[in-house]
Image 1 (cartoon, helix red, strand yellow):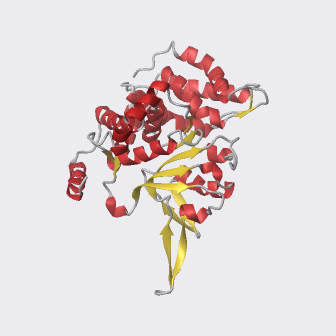
Image 2 (tube, one colour; image 1 turned 90 degrees about the vertical axis):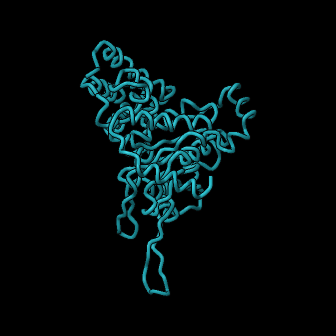
Length: 345
């Protein structure tokens, strides 16, 4: 794409009216999905979850062995976004490769002395981006991992006693290798709690893998380039529309509280989910409802998203099996009662 074409694309987006309707927000979802499924083959379910998290203003943790497409997915998402606010000096996507020798300042930025002016100035770190790819986040020490805590929770970072705001778009998509792999550090509970979803990426199907190999050249060149990108402002507008116009019935709130209570009282878990998890889940439910063409949240949304939102927040008792199974067990009674209630406006 030449520079003139790229500039015209920015102008077109700047002149576009703000998104104020559910149809407009749904169009943002469809454009994101259409581009991603052409760049990342065989990961449709993961793509839907990542888009849901983006519209819900949450963060995503992807887990699998190296070579499974985690980084490719994150880069493809960054390629879908157009920065229509270039004056803020914040780039669309930055990648942080986490290693054992990484320092917190390598993530947040640092203050540097300029001998020519005899003054200190702040050099922003890679965290000052719209999309931050935290690659292999569990290969670095907990001290560096904690450098992301304030940014993910409050969209700000403090360096040398000065707090600097991050962009409202700020979205972290982190990858980690399984904990039994050599050279990994387990993420602390406080860090895990900042991620809306934890998604385990299994191997793609045989047919999808064959399709990837056959279309590798077109995928590498950018198979979705013919589909319009979305702008930073469109994503922010879509978040607002989802939050304000997708209905959540009181019964949904009651079901979520009942599920949380079940995780706290079951013998299979030593620690249940936090209230923060319930708060973060609400916009995720709204985003998924819109993606499925509804203006209200249903029991199906809870059933699908609950394992991704709650499982990584549980501390299991010995011999309890998988966290996903515990979550499904805790959801069963609440969802059964919810299915008999009217959830529309």
